[in-house]
Image 1 (cartoon, rainbow, N blue to C red):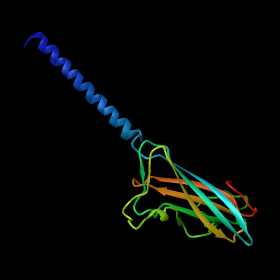
Image 2: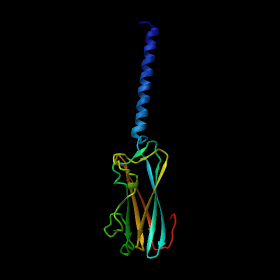
Image 3: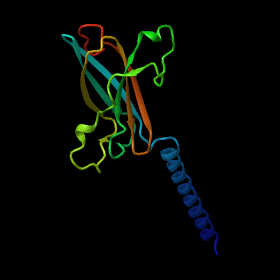
Image 4: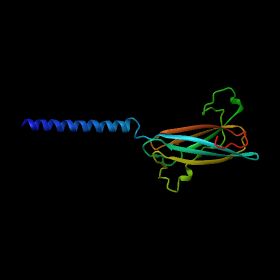
Length: 177
């Protein structure tokens, strides 16, 4: 072996090691630092409309994918729900937790992606990177008090994103609280 062959072999080994280290760093950044995982923000924007004795509530659920990968729901979408609980007068001067037995469910949980299940329940709902999807949930109630809204979104990797909002149904008309 000549000196040039040895130098060329060492140079090739250094390039291969650098490529492997660079590839390893990219894999680490992509998988370990959640670059390759979903990042979702949920915003609830309720509007309340008076209708005599009852109220009509329109809850705009905005799903914002702030990550670099598409977000897929679990199939079926039954775990993407909006829950509504009434806050009673008994909870005066206390901390309120969602699981508190004194919070009474106003309605059964509403599957807010149900309208997007077009017969084929094997297809997930997809939110593309850097986009916002909007879903409306509309319900009516005769309850005239304060309610707590909670939206749950569960993706295919079982990541759960939750948003809460308090709304006052004692007022006549509120838009975009």
